[in-house]
Length: 92
Image (cartoon, rainbow, N blue to C red; front, side, top):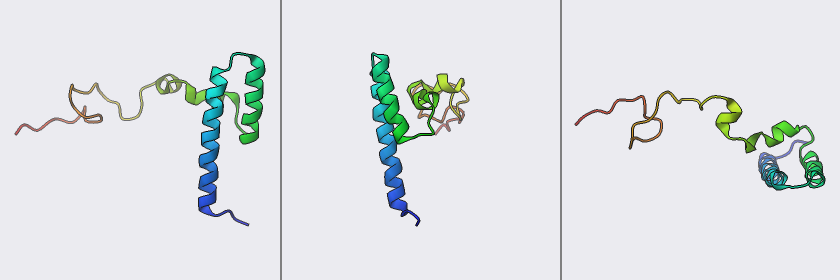
């Protein structure tokens, strides 16, 4: 029997929040025993997740991707809104 769409969305949202909490606890954990206990809980929440995938969001995005984000072409001018670096301003 198919699961209603709202229930599916709710489950995904709860899973994502739970993984975020566990990720913060894992990063702050001091001992290997504590990290192992947290990892066991992660596996219960999402069995297909690997340790690298689990820890990927904790790294800075530029470092993880190895390059600046999409759409970054030039340094923005001082005072211009983000994403408008390559547009020219029209003088009044």
